[in-house]
Length: 303
Length: 303
Image (tube, rainbow over all chains, first blue to last red; front, side, top):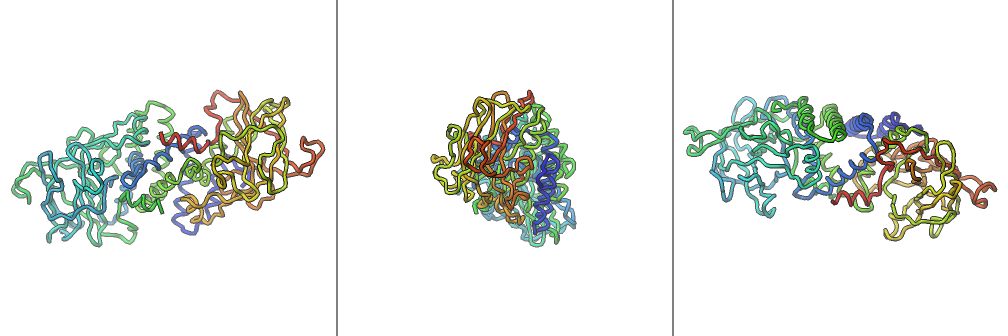
């Protein structure tokens, strides 16, 4: 324990953490320490660089508020969020719609709306429709499934970025009908830059990344007994569809706004047609939620 | 880029970061992403666990103030700070005194005191002496070297934990004499628990670690042309000398309080005798400072 050098330090830490009663916490922390130390050794990290990292992480934490989650943004831009989503999808026993990033703008309390309602209070762009079915992995419709949707406006802004937090817009919660159908009205969102006024923005600029996300509409779809699908639909043709700053785009989530079609529940509107497939919940599913309401994280962090 | 799964995500991130102009930043971030992703894959990190980690890191950042650096404490308890010190010592071209943790209580503005002064305003324990030489790696004394010292009191508290921040105690800055000698009066410190009222304390409790540091006295020793030595002297016999929560103890830094000795510059006092050896600064030394004044980090983070 006393002859600590740049090699023996790792076993010294693992030894001191070996008393952890919870086996999963012990496993996670042991792996974290090994990889963290391997990283520091691999790059021969200097005290000055370590200090910059401490200052950066401190700034990330201090940028967080009830309505801004800079650590999730950091996780997103490092590809960690997307990786955790992919691991989550892989653990499913049935195939379902792929996960995509929850992002920092989800809110648990979006208004419950009847099917067909427009989620935009004062649309300043042409109204489009989104419709489809929520099914199980065999393609059977799931009635009364909860479909939560949220998105930015035609200029790329979410309500939380423009309005008083009490004034919700561009979001809503729907329930599928008896056959599992959902349909709603909205506008086509614009892609946008991630928030660049914090330390994560500084990092993105230092890496000469463009900072944009391609246009997308967020969905959180759930029903009793099924894994929640936290996902997003991306609009094909966006110039950043192949270079998303937070690595959320997957081929199966890229959609198109198609011409009005008489077979649609919204036959007069250009529409996105997308069916969500939910995998059955497994015993291993500790939690179906891929991501979280930032206000809840801050509240937990404050306790 | 679009066929992202739990394996291909890593190359997608590295590819997007490959535009980083600064080669060292590019190298560090690439290594960090590879190790971070390997960690997540190795433990098959779940969304719920990821969310707990986000909440934990947010809480660590929000616990930081001008006088409390919880991220340094996290780095210390994970052994990262000690590892960075060991890597720093290894890069030296000459052997010098080993580094030890700066800790969160260093202040740049401690009072300049004449040699022999007691750094404790109202000693409530027997006064002891500390003396020795500051030398180069050949053992030649360095005149006018700056010796900064700070420590907790006989109950294990630093001034910043007890007093108004304006009211400094238990710290001072000395200059070596023409032969490189230093000597000062103080009291023997007590070991103490790291601050346990924040998220790092929660982690330590969850791991059933005792949270104690053995008794020690911090030193920051510097002179023009030499690497700064950020180190600490540990008192042998402390019950936690072999299980320091932050992995700062090295054999060569363990000292004893010896009986009064006529050869000492403080012949009437029990004394610690320790010589500091400074290695010459190398061209590779970006910065000699192992650690930092937390108030500076917060100020930087706020900009």
